[in-house]
Length: 195
Picture 1 (cartoon, rainbow, N blue to C red):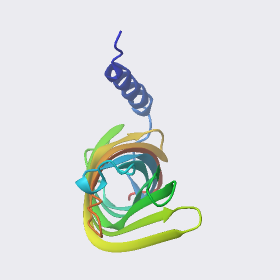
Picture 2: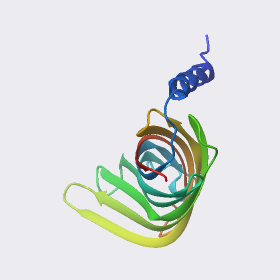
Picture 3: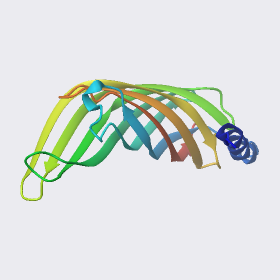
C-alpha cells in the first residue's frame, strides 16, 4: 500500500496554525531567524558528484520599516560531502560549501496567524571545494556576486516566536554554477513592537 504524505502535511500545518490564531499578532520591529533545510544544486556542474544535494543552514536579521516591508541581512550555506574513489588514491573525501551573504527586501502579507512573504536579496557568493586523500589536502575558494528569491509562510507560535517555512532559489557562479533550490524550516525570534 502506498502512503501519501500530503494529508499528514496539511493536518500538521492546520494544527500549527490553529493555536496561533489566538496569539497576539502585533507586528514587531526586530527579527532574528535560524533555519535548517535541504538544497539541491541545479547545475550540470554537480551531476553524479555526490555533492549535488546538501544541508542548508541559514540565519537572518530583519528590520521592519512598517508592517509589510522589512530590510534583511541574510546568510545561507549549502554544505555537502562525499567519498570518491580515484585511480591515484584509494579514496578522496570531497567537501563542497557554497555560501550566500547579503542585504535584501522582504514583503509581508497581511498580519495574522499565518503570514505569507516574498523576499529578494543581492548576495556575495563564496564557493569552497576541499579534497582530502589522507596525506594530501587541497582547497580552493572562489567568490562572485549572486542573488536569491525566497517565499514562504511565517506561522506565529506566540508573541515572540514564529515558524518560517520557506522555499528559496539561490544563484551564484564563483567557479562552478552553485545555483540551488532549497526548502527550510526555522525559528524566528521577534522583538520590540512597532509603534
